Length: 425
Image (cartoon, rainbow, N blue to C red; front, side, top):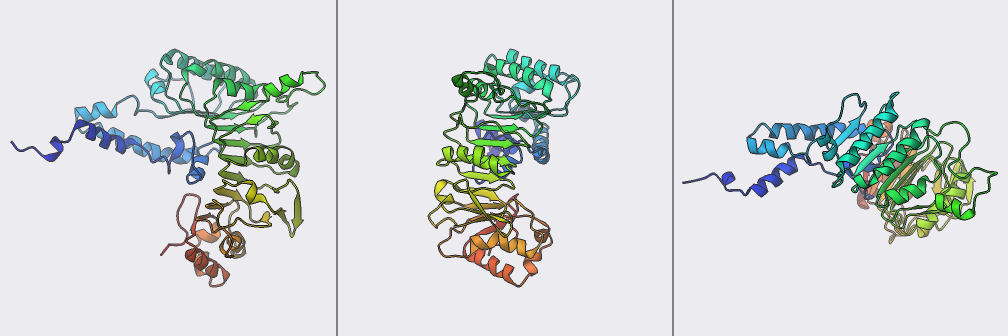
C-alpha cells in the first residue's frame, strides 16, 4: 500500500524539523547565549545590562507563537511542543505575587528580575530557595540578571544566591547591579561561579555614602587579606562589562586569562583610564578581540596629546592588541597617530556617536578607507539622521568618493543591527 513520503520519515527527523521551528538564531538574537563573538557582539551587548533586552521580546514571543501553533496539529506534535525544556525559556519576573510553577524554573534558560517592590528581597530569596529544592540534578539556567537591586537588598540576596550555587551548575552569564560596596564580592564570584563566561557589573546606581568595596581607609588590614578579597579569577570568562557612574573597583587583582570582549561605560575622566582601565587592559591585551570604549579617552602608553578638540592616541596602540577584531570608539573625540597594518586582524569599526552631518561621516570613514597600507575593515558601523534620511546617497562630493572606495575595498557600511546603508554590487 502506498504511503506518502512524510509518513516514512523517521520520528527523529520530524523532531529535528520541529525543533528548528522553535529555536532562535543565536547570532542575531543572542538573549539566551552566555558569550559572543566579535561578529555578534553588538547584538549580544544589547541583551546585557543596558536595559534594551526588551527589544528581543518580540522575537521570543514569535517563536513561542510558532510553538503554540504546532500543538494544534496532532497529539504527537502537542507532546513535543509541550516539552518542559521548550517552554518558558526566558522568564522575566516583574512580580512574585503569583507563584511560579516548578516546571517553569526547570525549563528556564534566562531569568531576569525587574521592577523592585516592597517585598522584593523576600520574593527573590524565596525563588532562590525554590531553586535549591529543585536543583537535585541542577537547573539548566544559563543566564541570570539581577540589575535592579537596592542598597538594602544587595548583600542578603547575594548571600542566598551564593548558597544556591550548586543548584545552578549551568550558570554562565551573570548581571549584577551593585548599589553598594560588598567586600569580598570578587573573591566570592570566583569561588561560587568559577565557570562564568560573561559578567556584567553595573555600578551606576551606587548609593550615597562611603564606598567600602575596597577596605576602608584608616583600618589596619593585612595586605594579603586585601588582595585576596579583591581577587577575581574566572578562568573561562570571555565577556566583561563594567558600567560606572563615579565608582569603579580596583582591578589590579582581576585575572581573566580568556577575556576576549571588554566594555567600559563611561570611562570619562583620564585618571580612570590611566590608573585603572589601561593597566587592566595591558594585562589582558594578548587575548582581547573586542574593545568597546564609550565616550572615552585612551592612549597607548597612558599619555595623551590634545589637538583641535580631539585626543590623539599615541603610536603603538595596535601592536598592544594583536588579536583585536572590533573596536568601538568616538571618531569625534579620538584620533589615532597610526592605523593598523594590512596584516592586523581588525575586521569591524563601530562609531559611538550619531552621524547627523556630512563632515561627521567623512571624519568617521576617511581614516579607514584611504591609504594603501592601512587595514581596510570588513565592516564600518554607523548610525544617525544623516543616514536615515539617505543624505549619504545624494551627496556628490567627498562622501560619494569615500563610498566608492569602500566598495573597491569590499568594506560594508551598516547600522548597528547589520542593515546595509549602501547596497553592495
